[in-house]
Length: 459
Image (cartoon, rainbow, N blue to C red; front, side):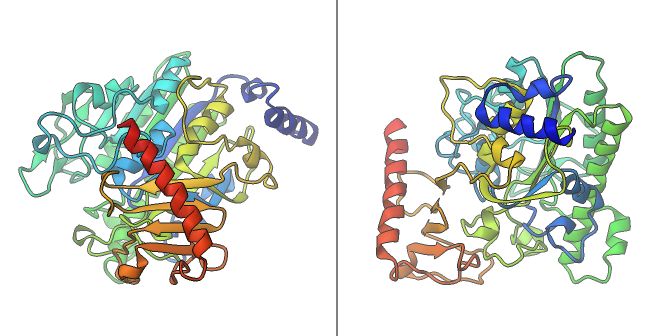
């Protein structure tokens, strides 16, 4: 795209005169890649010195990398609900991790079927849709992928599986969890990563005039750590559990590289928008050997509203339209992908279904444009429980309610129930500024209380 056309495109897009699709020869495909439990700094392009991730790094070279991008929640199901609906998870009616079906026989847990997912939006605009990988958003027919807008599903319904037996191992009973649409399938001994790549390629290869929307929810590097043996050998000199985690991340990178190469081979790479993001911070659970991931300078990890739990690597690549090898330091959120991808693809969102996400396209095109967000909200647990964890950000100020740090690095007392930080002056969040800035604490606390009361009233 020459300079004149690019400047014209920016003006037209920002002014809203024409959909961006007019600058493309056809509607673009959309590939949204979501990894599981990947720390903020766990890519070469995010500053890691000990990880080999050339394929994902190439996405950043061919696209735009965010430095202040947030997951919708610090735990799996709420984070996925936020990204797929364009709503903060509390607004989408998903408050915590979805229970497995044997613990929820009435099927009450899960993303409400009344919510509209990205898959439903794109399908209603002429796209064929697929989910490859992890679901974890409900188990009744209307809450499974085929009931939430996906034409095709291959993967597991629950929160994690062994990648070779495809069993959900937890506290028991241990259940086989591999499905093609609603049909249980058995592929014992076959590595789930390879199965996902094969399924993704097959779906992309379908002879169809329709573009595709694919949500590739990679279940890695979530435990159990089962990276390829060659990568375990490569990282043999690293300390455990970093070496097990690193091997799994490089395994992910190779899987992404295979799908990227396939898009190129079938002539669809140029016309495919690719998004890459982690669902939240790395895990320090026992099953994850108490760590392995790296949140860089940030405190916290998975389950925490501290930056290490919710600030994640995020990349968008579409060289046909978007800048390449660019950085955006704006704060943005996974709820923004729905309106942003819809705008780029020329897809219409339902006019009577409000969302929290903002269209990021103007700032993608021009890094001088400010973030469209004035405030952001996070919460998990029941809204009526006064002790549930939550956070509000307004500008550089962030207020955490009932904070926790699963890494044990930060410890919170009774005086820290309201924990105020300024991310411009201290992104490590090591000091509570609430007593020093009571007016800012009151302001953000009032924002949270108004938000949560509106949610409790709706229920």
